[in-house]
Each structure stands twice: as structure tokens, then as C-alpha cells.
Amino acid sequence: MLTEPEDFDRAELEAVLERHWWLREPQLEYLPVGFGSHHWRAVDSRGAQRFVTVDDLQAGFQAGPDSDAAFAALDRAFRTAAWLRDEAKLDFVVAPLHDHDGVIIRRLDDRYAVTLLPLIVGESNTWGPYESADDRR
Image 1 (cartoon, rainbow, N blue to C red):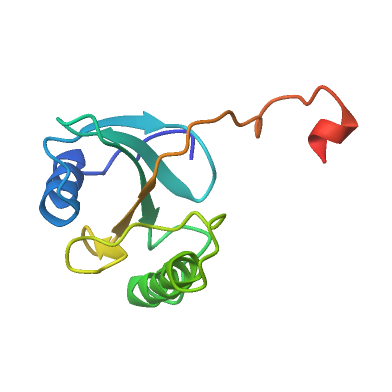
Image 2: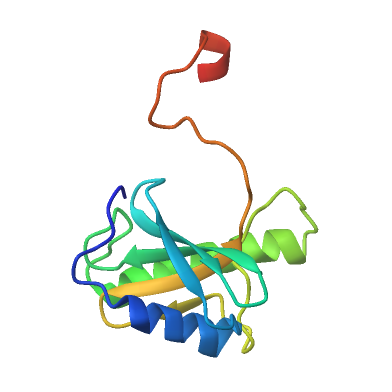
């Protein structure tokens, strides 16, 4: 998503990150990357950086018949990715981080859910031109 949701409570997101993932006083920067989810870079008072993903359970591409079904589908997908990283030892899988209760995804409210991932610094050319056909592939 290229814009931050207008009806979103950023203070609640900060509180959930602090309460469940122990990010101290997280500072959020909205990142207009990807599609289907909203993303922020979170930097806490110790300098720890994380990639925050917030999914709209009522309007996203993963939406099920209701927000509970969409949440359950996301939970299964994210737990699968975490299993591949943690149990199958597939280091190349970038998966959400468990919070201090061992949870992968948290509800912010009836509409939004949050996951926290490692921040991988790099460049994306998703929305721009490619220099060659090889780059595009």
C-alpha cells in the first residue's frame, strides 16, 4: 500500500509493539512498499529496527468471509513461515518474529492485525523501470 490508512490508530500500534514485542518507545516511519498490507519501519530507543506489517482483515487480498477467517488464514501462513525458519532450519525464509508470549500475529482491533519481522535493508525496484530484461526476470 502506498499510503498509510486514514482511520488507523498509530498510537495503538506503538502500544502493541511495546507491550508484546518489547520495543521501547518505538518510532514509526511509514514505508510505501508492497501491496495488500501496510508497512512501517520501527526503531526503538535502543536502536533496534524491525519491519512492521499491518493487514486490513476486512479489505485486503487475503480477506475471508469475515475478519476472523482472514485473521486465521494469516496466522496459519505466518506460523508456517516461522516453522520453516525455526524448525526446518531454512535460513532464507524471512518470517515474523514471535512476541514474548510466542504469538506470531496480534489483533489491533476487529479490522487490523500486526506482525513484526526482521528489517532487511535493501532496494526494491517493484514500481520502477528495469535496466534490462535480465533485471526484470
